[in-house]
Length: 345
Image (cartoon, rainbow, N blue to C red):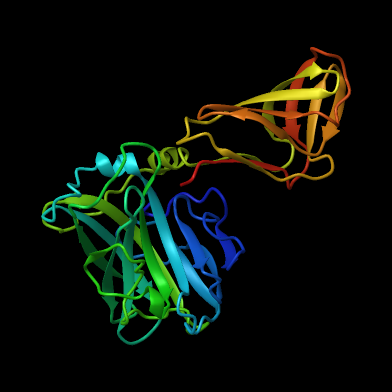
């Protein structure tokens, strides 16, 4: 989903470091993480530097701003996408058959000179966790398409549900205790090999990635990238994240006074989400307003009453004063007001 980097609901540029803005903060369906208190920092952003004449609007750019010298044995810096277990079960990949492959293809570019190795790893989440690492070789500073093929293994298990089934990761730094043999399944945590390049060794390093495609094949050979319209990609992304409202004077919905001091508002999601989402909101003095009966009640934020995959009920129980039963319009009232619904894996 969103392999062509079209949809960026959260932000088109953000600084990331250990404990700050990690996981999902920019392009939809992909996260960035500094694991095990890894040193270093970077800016991830939307870039128009893309492979020539291949129909990609954007790439994902990683600009190293603080180095990681890879001195910690368990350091790891990763870019990842997490997949639902049921999508693996229904993908056509015969994951218990070593002659059936999960084929991962992507376009990659870096200004780092020389011959470099970038590990691509998959990690299963159901049953006993298994790891498989393969590496691509970057020998120039041009855009190149790379392919890795992951064979099935008789020990793999995936539940046919909407839970976290598989993670696909690209590791830009891997400490020695997380290195192991390439192209083999193991139950030991392995994110790279002894050949893996530390792309965070210099603040001069920039990395770009786009055109990511994960597919089931019988021969391990990637097919051409399947381009989809922006609307199609956005619809797929909304299953996992929805920026419901952002900015000042935007409509949120209708609300009603359940008691003289308690406002209740029902939010219907743009589309059904993967699971009941987490409500993420910005709050502050008079960030929101309830217009009713010719008056206005200003309030700072919402409490979460109940939520399922299709809707949520939010309330404010301490900053409203009116008549029971009055209905009205709920809006944002500050440029920093924002409400998100997050059902990411």
